[in-house]
Amino acid sequence: MIGGSEIDRTRDAFLGQPAVDRERIEREYLDAKARYAATEYEGIAWDHRTGLAQLRKQVELALRAENRAATQLARTKPTTPAGGGALVDYIRSDIKDDLCSRNWPTAALKTVATSLTQMKKEAACT
Image 1 (cartoon, rainbow, N blue to C red):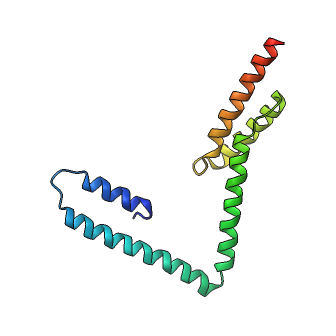
Image 2: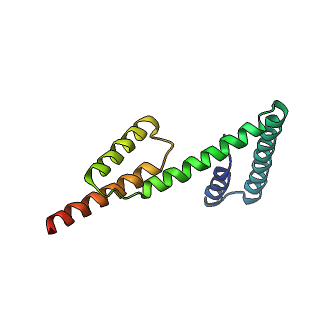
Image 3: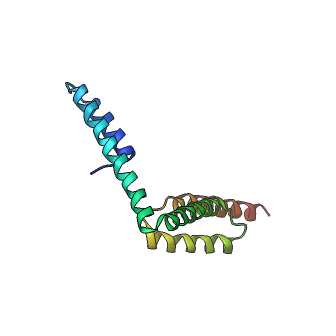
């Protein structure tokens, strides 16, 4: 079972194969897109029927806010080795808790590593 952009990627992969029935692939692609859209619509309708639409909206807003905060944290450059260590420790705990679903820890670790390297170079020059 696939959905969303996976439907498009699968269509493209099938069309890239030699000697395929392009018309059949297109028919099945359009059918899959229609079934997916109907499923999405039914989910929204269910949220409304059960009174969960407002809660769903709040969850989506909270997830977007969390993503913005995580992106900002990933770009935060520590100014001391202690700050770098604290950020690395926080990142480590987040990776441990939820390794598969987040992208920001890798970017944050790169930022910390760069900052700590620059601190080391600056300290050597003074």
